[in-house]
Length: 392
Ligand code: SDX
Image 1 (cartoon, protein in one colour):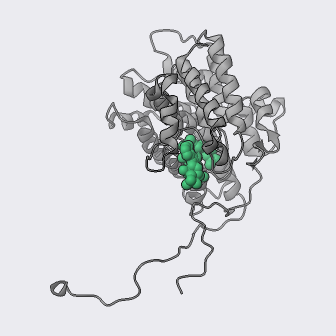
Image 2 (image 1 turned 180 degrees about the vertical axis):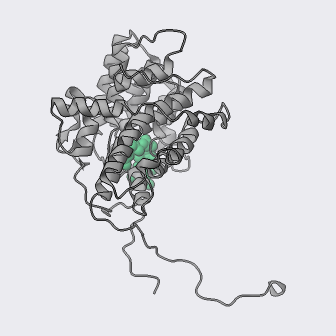
Image 3 (image 1 turned 180 degrees about the horizontal axis):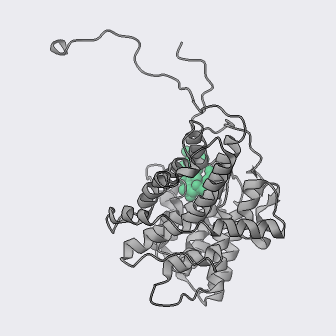
């Protein structure tokens, strides 16, 4: 009598929607965006082109690509009034805390992209979010170190511009290394979408009530923050630093296997992949390339990461549970080499994932949908009569 519902805690076997955007075969370790393998996109495409693909379903031709890049680039600045939001935060705020607030606040500024029933308005909201996320992300960093905010430079590519706003200063001409800009672009691309993960499902659920797109993406950012999800990239680097030396790896592996110890190997395991996360393979290769180009092949953290991966791939505990490295395992090593502080790692995941969130929101809103409303198995008290305060 407590309800006749399918009980599926953690949604292990429940499809919440139909979608044409991304396909994952977790057993085989396959990831396709609109049918295209992630390995091919990582090698031949770039982030904004992949954004177009995710949003519209096809790769753009030359004119379409140029027009899309132009349109997005036109929206890189944020309303000048938004600067005041930053001043309300402590300088030592976690940048993800700032992101949750400031991105949610975009709905207070862009009133002409709040009408979710209008396709043009939905498109402009998408352009604005893709374009402004790097600007807001870089502002959250500049605020933390007490440097002036950098305006975007629309002559630069998406990734270059982000690095310019992160590391440039008004008194000097920015000189962004193409190697680092390419690595940054690849990281955004590898995070672009991953079907119904916790944050994307959150965006869809928020959107199903008719909430505006900025509010929905802010909800996604909040869901991404946790260490089981996007927060893992920051946790991986902290873990590698805590391990500190190859001689201590066994100790941490033993702790990860110990059920009485809450410690888990960060960057390992995945709800869907029971094989290599294909993004982790690309990321590992990219880490090797970037560090070699920067002359950092001997980076001690990279060494610890590789040794740890090798041990985990051989250890029966990890083998039996099919725990492989995921997208977050190697990304931090690249980000660190680029000079990005650890506290910004999850923010960068959020910047890259924004297109996935918007593409899913847009797919839902432009199709037929109902408000998301899961049920529960009630396990509380049966009906009982109120007891007056004196009798308790
Ligand atoms: C992302 O969903 C997505 O698509 C997410 C993502 C995306 O692009 O959006 O791919 C991005 O979030 C990557 C995941 C980042 N998180 C981490 O790296 C944190 C460490 N990983 C784990 O916490 C865990 O593996 C999850 C959260 C990723 C998956 O959790 P599940 O599917 O609920 O699996 P589980 O926790 O039930 O694990 C199954 C078993 C358990 O042992 P038993 O109880 O069966 O004996 O494996 C064990 C777990 O204890 N286990 C681990 C482990 N991960 C799982 N043991 C040691 N170290 C680990 N990392």
